[in-house]
Length: 409
Image 1: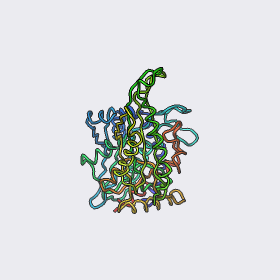
Image 2: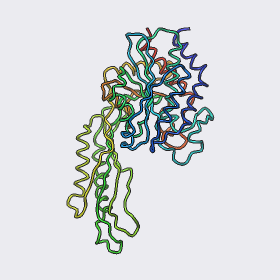
Image 3: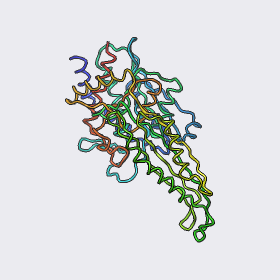
């Protein structure tokens, strides 16, 4: 039996173990916010010890985490060095998740298996790829061939807040410098590029007043309405801006949250809005931020008694293909064709992910992992998130065979 057949057979014979491992990973909550994620990392570190592996536990300083708006972050690196002369490939998945929310028919942290699916928060995005990547590496090492280079498993806990204290922190601290990266994704599509994202908090200050005498106040909500009209009035222009990257269309902008006022009979003295502006890879984030700030300020310029504060919450840069990523894409596509019997696509996505942080350090990165053809199919970040077990099996095989292509002597 050749190495490829040995890998496929090993994954098939250990698949029940892989599903049980994923259940264990899913059953430990990591809601972010509040973002108390170190306990999950400690548990995963113990779980990989059963394979004879050691997970380095890199705790981000508490003050930095709290200033960031979370409670605890411990990022994991599992290093699997082989012989000299080959590349180091990092496999990155994140363990922090959005809170479950309402409407579940399965326990959000149950890891229940039913009709060929495993249900639970992050089964698809991206605790599922904790299992994909670990069992792909185990299968590679069980193939009995000489390997060169190495694999690093990066399990990080800051994707939902932007990644700066996840992969960004590991890279800034010089704890890792891989040659290539495969980050969590979906098994029927390789993501080679993604949008940038700007998030702003806009605080409109007016003056409270009695509802029976509104002239004694300065209505912050009325001023905020001017800003809303300006923001949504700009959408038609944004639709005329087109990306040349397949899978990405135009920039978008929306106000996702509004808080303000004190009571029904009081003139609102303060309104806080949170704005999201997605940028296509061709846009300059610095220029876009300046444009959005000017749009907001101009909307209320000259309004008596109104003051606006604009605070940047996030500036996430785009992921762009780098030299070297084309080889990753070619091998993933070849192995997906062999395992799935069909061609999978390689394109951009309007989402953003922390894989961009590897790209910002000049490291070629693509997104590929277990999951369906599209995000909506998995209910990712919604009630009853789920992962088809067959997709988990297939993605594990594709990743293992791709590692073999790069690391076999």
